Image (cartoon, rainbow, N blue to C red):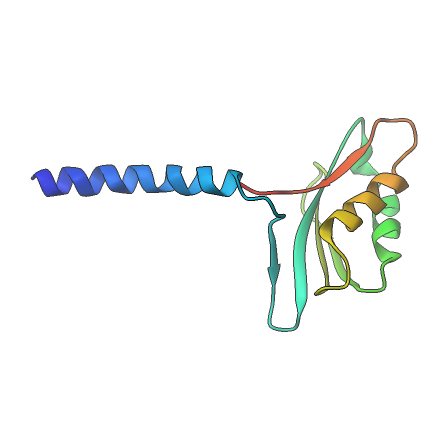
Length: 114
């Protein structure tokens, strides 16, 4: 009985501890697949900024290494796949933010997960 309680408590605490560790992660959440393609999320925020998809795509397509751009929703979440090691995720976000600099207070950042 006591063992079941301890195991049950451990199962409840482990996800919370893992979540806390993920929040402390200093780097962006990205994955590298077998073809050497990195995947990262660029998040866009500001007054109506997430609806300027053509500007966002244009800014990302300036990078020769970008292989795929996918808008995951209507809330400014963009999945970017690019050749591994060609650039940093932060460079992608900076390019998007520059493209959206139209006085609306648009911001772009790399989603950190957690």
